[in-house]
Image 1 (cartoon, helix red, strand yellow):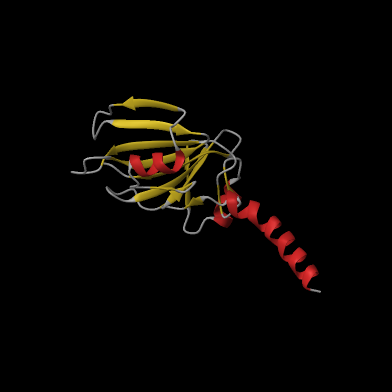
Image 2: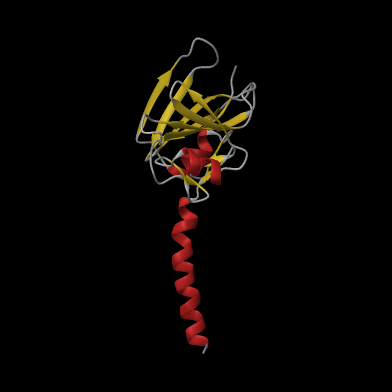
Amino acid sequence: MTKRICIAASLAALTIAPAAASANIVVNKSMAGIAIDDTEAEVRADRGAPSSTRYAAPEIGPKLKIVRYRQIEVTYARNGTAAENAVINLSTRGTFHRVKNVAGVGSTEANVKAFVTGVKCERVGTRPICSVGKFLPGRIVTTFFFNSSKRVSSVSLGRVID
């Protein structure tokens, strides 16, 4: 009897573990375990060296450092008077990263609306764009961008700068 319970528990853990591992976009907080405001050192300690690095100098705001880890793009900027870069944006075009194991790249607008709490969608031209949060300076917003097939093409989670 005990042996059956152990086997059943092991099988249950195996079926639950992959689903939990893919539920790694936490709306307005983190993506793949990387959180907004994490320092560059914290991310590097957790993820190791990025596969690529580039820099951007926008017209307004701080100079940006953009690094890539597998399917995640991480954007760093100096955070106020901090001596170190901090994460201000996370984005993915990969299908692995999802909200509640469901909504992510490849999802339909209906899917996003059904599984993302507090999402609001509007049309930009003929394409929907869905977001959670207020576009006010300092606030964090999660945005679902759609392609011409009306499926999510990328998900971005970031701090509003201006």
